[in-house]
Structure formats: C-alpha cells, structure tokens
Picture 1 (cartoon, one colour):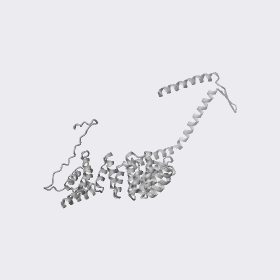
Picture 2 (cartoon, rainbow, N blue to C red):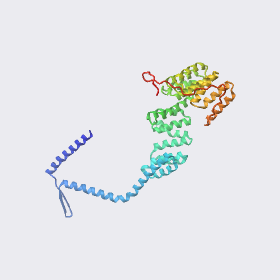
Picture 3 (tube, rainbow, N blue to C red):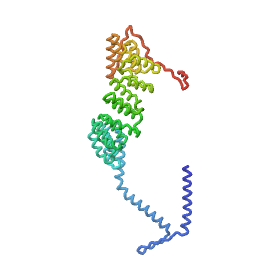
Picture 4 (cartoon, rainbow, N blue to C red):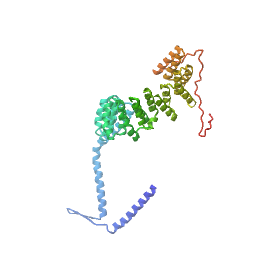
Length: 418
C-alpha cells in the first residue's frame, strides 16, 4: 500500500513540474541588478537558483569555520555519554564506587545532568552513603524534580527514616500527582512508619498504573492488607474492616490467613474457620492449610476428618500432613500423629514438623527421641542439618515415596504413564 502512495506522489510531482516548466517557459521574467556601475540582467528562475547556491555556499563556509571551535564540545559530549554508559554498567554490576565516580563526571554535560545525578545518588545510597546521595539529589532536582523526589524518599526509607519519606511524598499524594514509583515508595514508607491508612490508599493508583508486575503488586497488596488487619483493636473493628474489603482482596491467601489468626485471637473461631474453608474450596493453599490446623477450637475431631478427606487430592502435600499431625497430637493420637509427621518430614524437612514430632514422642513417653526431634528443629532453624532418628525395635518402616496421583484428560479418561 505504501509503494502505491509513493508512486502516486511522484506522478503528482512530475505533473506539477511539467506544468510549471511550461508556465515559466512562456514568461521567464526579468531581473535587473545595478550596483556602482555593475549591471546584471537575468531571468527570475536563474536569480532564484543563484540565491539558493549562495545560501548553500555561505552555510558550508559557516560550518567549516565553526568546526574547529566545536571539536572540544563534541569530544566532551562523547566522553560524557561514554561515562554515563560505563557508570550504569558499574551500578548494575555492584561496583558502586566506580559508578558514582563515572556518573558524576557524566553529569557535567547539561543534557545528561539529570539522569546521571539520579543514578549517582542511587549508587551512593547502595554504598550506604546516604548523605552524599541526598546532595546529588539536591542537584538533580533542578533537572528532574519528580524523579529526584521519589528517589529521595527511597534513600530516606533505606536510611531508617520512613516518616520523613512519607512527609516528602504526602503533598503530591494528596494532589494525586505522584508517579507510579512514588506510590510504591509511599506505600512502603507508610508501612514502615505505621500509617497503614496511607499505605492502603496507595494500592488503588498503583494498581491502575500497572507499573508493578502482577506478582510484585500481589505481594505488596497482601503485605499492606495483612498489616491493616493485624492492628484491628477488637473483633467488631476487624469484621467492619473485613466487610469493607473488595471480594478480590478477601480471597488473597495471605490476607485470609491474617484475618483468621486475628479473628481467632478475639475468640471468633467460627468465622475464621469459615473463611479458611471457603478459601481452600476455591483454591488450595499450603499457607491456609497450615493455619487450619493451628487455630484454636473444640471441633478438632471434625476438622481432622475434613482434612483427612483432602489427602485423596493432595497426598504429597507436606503442609497438609503437618496439619494432620498437629491435630492428632492435640487429640493425643500419638501413633497416627507420628505417621503423618514422619511422612511430612520425608517430603519436606522443616523445623515445625520436627517440633510436632517431638511432641508426639513426648506423648508416647519416649523422651530420648523427643529430645532428638527438638534438637533437629533448632538445627534447621539455625540453617544446620538435621540428624536422623534412631531406629528402635518397635519402629516400623514407613513408605516415604511420593504417592502417584492419577491424571485424567479433559474427557475424564485416565492417562497412561510412560
């Protein structure tokens, strides 16, 4: 399509040139130039051509005269661009001292001053030189005020001054003129300073901007909402806050976990259980299944039966096995608890499972094995390696291999394994 447009344009130009030539040929015009005895006679077309040639000649001469004087500025521009590139590479590689030096040199060029000073401030902040970072930002604010303000808030937050960072961003937040990075810094600074209302208000504009990826935004959203839930002073305030949250936010596993634990602490065990069970029916969550087993209540037997029914669909879930083991310990079903906990440890070793297994051995009166379990829990908590339990004559060999789950296609027909 573009080729035909160019062809059509050339045809139109050729037609205009042909008609114009005939129009000029009929009457080429007459130009007379007389100066101090000099007399020049020519046509209008020739006069226009001579003027264009004179203009081109003068332009060329002017550029030739300026070239020696512009050599220094061109070299300065080239070196500054090179230093900016080298400084950014050094910043990414973690050579923050080299990055700060190169970027400060690159900032001597006016066109690169803002970006170079911002990057230099980031390099200084990563080195822990927050004072030097703020000095660079004072200069960068003249070229890029919004970016400098956001980066200043980040530097203040890193320096342990979230309240100052929040105060710096609050005026723009009230006007709704913050950049996406500013909303993120506002949320983090508000979280760190305890102003959870501000942190929650920053979520909506940050989501609309799309600046954060879905995973990063979901993590920040869960952190902010959980913090709001954890400071609820009583059950009524907690339920009021929970009812105000949109449905999508009430389905986030971390938020449901925070609500369930906070509600249980106020004695609202039944609403907590309802939310956890509803969330598990919608989507399986290892976090919520662990919460399901730790919440207080008198219905442990009913919860154990319900959780054992989930084993058919999740036989290799270490968190589900840990939850079943903990509930069996609470019901003093020591043998059954050991089976669940040993299998959980075989799938995914963890300090919580070792601790629960130690409780099961205490219930059976085996203090030596219980001490080994508790030592393993402490060792894993310190990042050390756990030691296996001593096999006794009464110990039974447990099958710890993952259970194969039957896979079916969209028509419900089982798939054959290769």
